[in-house]
Length: 320
Image (tube, rainbow, N blue to C red; front, side, top):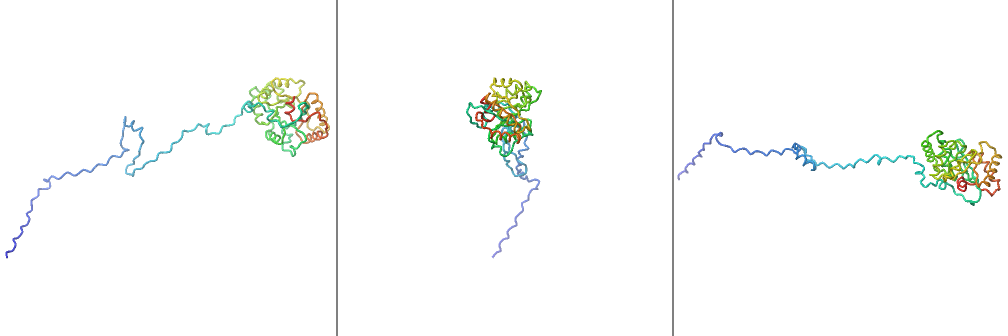
């Protein structure tokens, strides 16, 4: 058996030098797209993008979608955010109905042909009955005139009205003020004592001694519907002028001074009854102190007269 012929060894094919064999050019890797924020545009491109929603892309970070900020409402005017400031308004605006006398009056029932006697107690801040016990249980109606100059005027007026009594106002006006000054002061007075049925000059010095003051009081009362009570200065010209302007007006018949004893108080009231029978009404002023009030209550309980009705101030003015 012949041995198999030997397999010839593979002949190595000579390879050309590496430098001579052209290699395939390396495949270029795709260059990453440039980040969007780096792109700069100008001119028309920027104008086109101005109307488009803007998207923010951060380089080398996961994309973040920014939530749109809540819309901020337009800033409201200051006046809409700030509560309105209370500005004193003229009496014609405060009391648009012009019926202060009837609106602030207490209920009173008497025959229209019966003469009326009104007792008005003056609260000047020193003499006062505001908060006095049993003030609501008096056997006859009384009214209270509150001095606007007193620091307690507003509180006292409220206390008297809550006790069931009428309130009048003694205005505090500048002596030599211009018409605008007097009008402004009177407005402040009326705003401080809104319960008032009338304006009173208890001694001729509140407004009667000033032509401007008297004119402003009559003008205001004609617009607001307040009554007016004047002091007797030898004539009743102020009362006549007020009535011509349609203002219910009365005149003080008698003033009882502080410290007057009980007998003198009784005599003054008896004289006032006679005046009321003659004129149809009479108004008596007295200090708002406990002794004077006690003397009046004693007189009223002892008096048997039915020809005159003790009445609140509004009834005397309205029936005049």
